[in-house]
Length: 483
Image: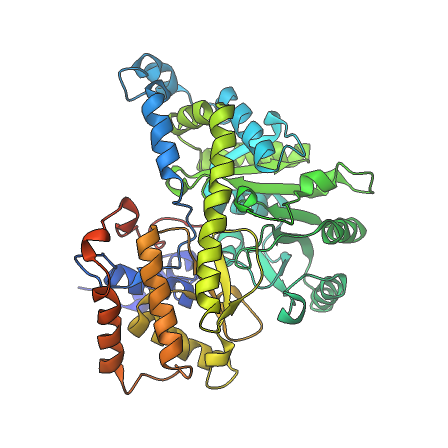
């Protein structure tokens, strides 16, 4: 006899039967559309191109070159097998000392060597997802809240709230000032929470921003520090895109700010980091909590037992990130390639009158399509998004899934594909924008659109569009945590 929904709700926990994961949001719906019809340059050239995945796949040639030159870095090679036993049985949740030293060194280099990090304050976790949940467990109780400037990464609702019971309160930011967070907006959000009897335990910021690709300036960072000190709440800084900044203004870490001669209770400051974006290693699940609060470090380290990084991965990462020449070259080349890809994409969009928020970091663009909306509503945004997904065959993420207060914005990831696939994606967007600037409802001339799309492929030599590893369908975020 099968179980009804009612039976399931009685037999299972509220967490198991609830929707705290948020998989029904448009952000994840786009992944489902891609997973059901993934693009392949020869086997499925009319499939959906994945542009909803913030991965850095532009420098894997450098990684592969290093791995071939350093076989001893892996315990699963003849050169490294002598280390196999010691690494396989190591289970101290502090992590391998050489791993923490190497990560601390890399964090400094990713921040332009403007600040150093203490390896003893590094706590590892299963990716930034686990790190965010860990810091939420350490700082807040169920029902407490964090202020978060909008737009923000959709996964934060899951990462910080699903299992912890913590709330996220949006801080209003507007396109009129490039979505910069202001002291007035922070005060308004804090005061509203107070009136609603919600205890605010912290402020969460992402710098560089996901989805904006912008960096916070020194004045804003100082203002945030002053705000959390005045309110006596925590400041959690997600800096997982630190090394993706490819042009001026440079990235300024919160670690650099608190080294200045300003009034700051360091016990309130915490950094979340990972190697998923800067190095392009989301599958390694290397997440970091770096706290200036001794009690948080101690608590988080105990909690890390639920999401440790495997010692095999720690060993490889320790060896790779201890190679200063490689790290310096990787960071420089990554920035150079990200800049070139960003420039190519933004210039291509500009040629058809499509603009993006000015940015200089991250693995994505914040694309403005409000002129294509039939009306300035979120319903119209969703209609346009469905057209882009199902007809243009691009998985871009609608701004509403990032809690953007204004309709018409879309996050477009550009670093998770090879150059030729990027050009195909760009051609699709340009063709769509030029063909119809009122793309809202299902198109009457759908046959004509598909014909044009096929022509855009046929105009290329398909033997030049070679298969690359990044073209393989990645696993859905429903089965692997993404940040």
